[in-house]
Structure formats: structure tokens, C-alpha cells
Amino acid sequence: MKGEVARIELDQTGQRDVFRGEPAFEVSGRIMADADGAGIAGLRVQIYAVPASGGAPVPVGLAVTSGADGHFKAPLRLPPTLELGNYTLAAVSKANGKWAAARSNTQ
Image 1 (cartoon, rainbow, N blue to C red):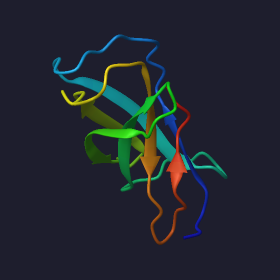
Image 2 (image 1 turned 180 degrees about the horizontal axis):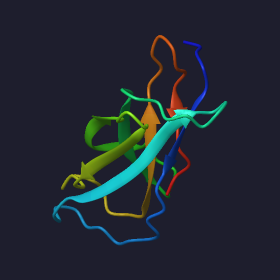
Image 3 (image 1 turned 30 degrees about the vertical axis):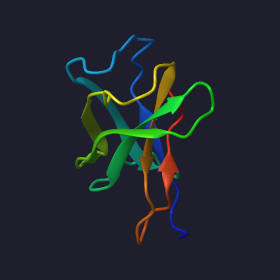
């Protein structure tokens, strides 16, 4: 599905060790129109753990909805079944009637 181009930026969190089963941690960011940087409200954003080894991304936590200014906060907890390894995080929003699918750079 084609639509207007959106982009997602995750807030810089730096490298951090997180272990399966630990208390939840939070990831935040913003989804915006690529053309003018205006925040996009009401889009669903899912966070994925992306294996450094190149395997398939794994969804972590529940999808969240961006606020009026495009910002979102996602409380996450790594599933106890997640394979041991190094991961980065990426945010993804599926296409809808107006916006094309978007994916952040990994953090």
C-alpha cells in the first residue's frame, strides 16, 4: 500500500544491557511526516528486538499509539523465550489509508 512517507526516530538511549525476565524498561520516540517533520497522531508503533546475528526480528511488548505530537512511549519486557544474544531495537508502523509503512533505524 502506498501513502505519504513517514519516518520514525527512537530517542537515543545508548547501549544498555537488558536481560530476559527483568522488570520492564521503556523505549520512546516520535513518528513524523518525512516532508515537514510534523508529528503524526494515532499511528500504531511496534518495537522489535533485531538480532545482531541477522535473524528474524522479534516483537517485544504491545504496540502503542502515537500521541497528538507523534511521540510514543512503549513499556517493554524481553520475553523469557528470547534466544540469548545481542539485539538492537527498531520501531515499525504498518501502512494505513494515508501513511506508508515506516521503520526506524536500529538503536
